[in-house]
Length: 177
Image 1: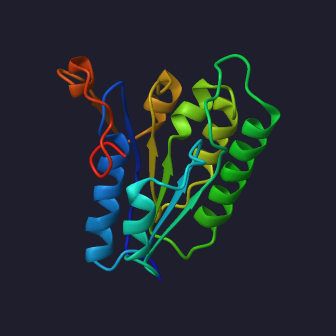
Image 2: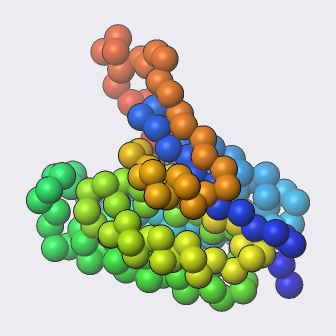
């Protein structure tokens, strides 16, 4: 049984920090209200992200799977493994979304996967068309396409006004990752 009578499509995009953080904040809020949340992370092969450990504490109402290899993807030159991992993530996301077991499905960094040409915009739009009415779907990442933004019900753009990196301060454990 689902908690939502009407699920929408949300997009968190922009060139600033906070997209994943906003989506995970939504997950924490939703679990607090008895919702079930499933998070699929694209292009995140590292295992030292703080959210991987903290979200385990929200199980079984919240689950997270991450796909991708460690290292950088080069725009215009994706490795076959990067494409395979992104396709596996999208296939898994489809299974989860259509299972009827989850109220909210978060596709973290899927917009980057489109931009890096790991999954096609067309395949993601087709995926969005399959969304059951009672499932809330959240897409995060930089470079949201116009067609994705048009399809969404919510679009939030994170805009960087100031960042500690500009002062030579590297990403800090527990804050930026």
